[in-house]
Length: 132
Image 1 (cartoon, rainbow, N blue to C red):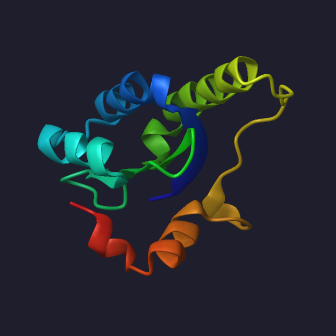
Image 2 (image 1 turned 90 degrees about the vertical axis):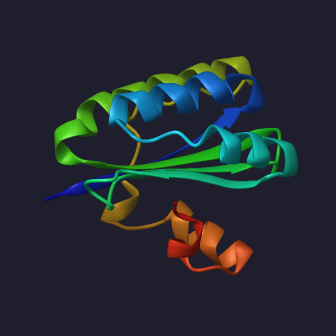
């Protein structure tokens, strides 16, 4: 099965609605206690598909006013999730006064920058250590 990985930054004011919507669209479990802990202390919140461990949400809180959201999704859910993340990215750009980009989000698994590698290097932890 083919997978896609997308990265967007979101302001904390859009965090809850964005994360909850992606979790629901992907059918991922939500650990409310862990999520609140990450919001309070900073760090990483993850949610992983119970049936397909290659699908997940990876959220980094407390790094900046713009927080990091990375999603890896299967081909069957790709279009819906990508479109939502592209809409979210454009909305954030408008809100932050950035230039709008007229191109689709780049699949990080097809080469170049990989946000998961960035965060595992920064926190000096193995990727699996973050996942629930």
